[in-house]
Image (cartoon, rainbow, N blue to C red; front, side, top):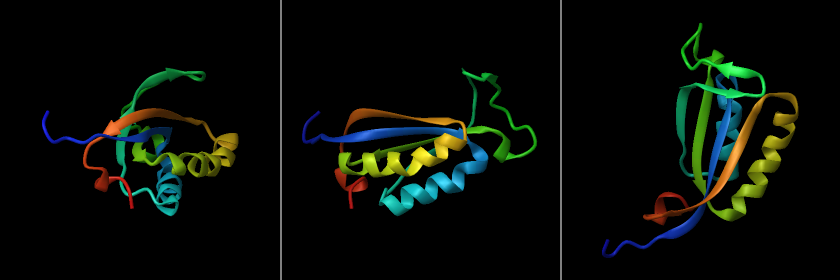
Length: 108
């Protein structure tokens, strides 16, 4: 691949109940995250057993994943913002190191 420059970022994968989507996206927006992707209707098995990823009654009753690529300096403030939430509600945040092209899409 010619002329592609890769830049390091952190990927956050936030899994929580759909009813808390607004809380999570507001937190990301306030932290300065430029963009994120939301995936609805997740299925999987966790501590509380298997969770079916189909709509039950509305989108609030399903698990969602919010994926964001952020500069390293935003990770700690975002995780600190989620800490009180995850003390009360179920969910998880995965972090990983990634490389992206077109850094302008992810940094302010």
